Length: 385
Image 1: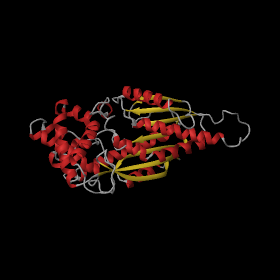
Image 2: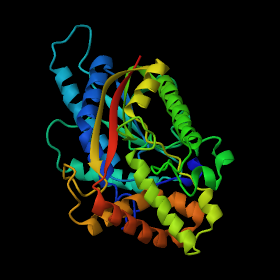
Image 3: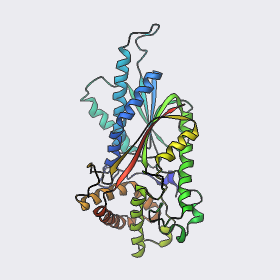
Image 4: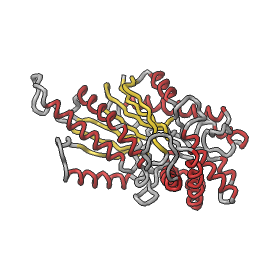
């Protein structure tokens, strides 16, 4: 599996597309908007850049990056207005606090950038016709197709990095997993199984790949950020230190069980399933904090944890039973299909996707009838030391 080449969200804007099934990520963007707005204002007030470079890493092609851009523009407009109201410090001119913004939208090369930029153009043409409040500063938008596990920018050239619902994805399958790919060590699992049929040695490989990737990510972004620059990072994790107990473990166990059922029906070769592992890892807060501390590159301004239901259209709180498991299972299955389709099709072929979807939806419905499960999400703001 070549993640850089193969992985992308479902294209277009049809029923099965990511853009139509990304409300869970949209809720996370709205939940973390105050954190983004604070970071933007802090960077602007401290640095007063003439050109502020803002990068959205793992932007995908849905509407959520538009929400991020809008929130940055409104924050800068407010901060710049407040700055202009201050008494002059002397020696400046009227343009001292005029700022332009350069947005860089980054994702893997397979991302649907055509749809993304059509959406950007349509949204901001619409917004221009109903502006309220202070006008936004001049801004420019460009795309950057590359993995964020590589260097993306010149040194000290970016003021703010944002990444939402991305950093739980790894740069590759865990290194060394090929040697352990035997039924007795990870059976037919595609991630760390909550049933503990994944051996500790295999679970450790997933953990080590996260440690390697996240440490590299911090190093690369530290090189690219200006002094005083910030990062707002939002990604999926787990509530405790037990690597077998995360919400992602439950979800991807159902994905694997659906694939196993296709093996029994003769639609998927068993060897194909045994060679399929998801490049993902949901860390604990402790793991994340330890890696940030060990890097010595960033101070952590803020970290928060919140939970959201599996069903992206269910915003109810509490742990009560799911009201309509059939409806919720369809919402969950469409969302996960839009995320995983590229990897499943690349490995198993296009022909199985509908059969897998039907089986996966059935399993999710059965699960939700017993338990209302939630995703654990972390959000943090890091400042370059």
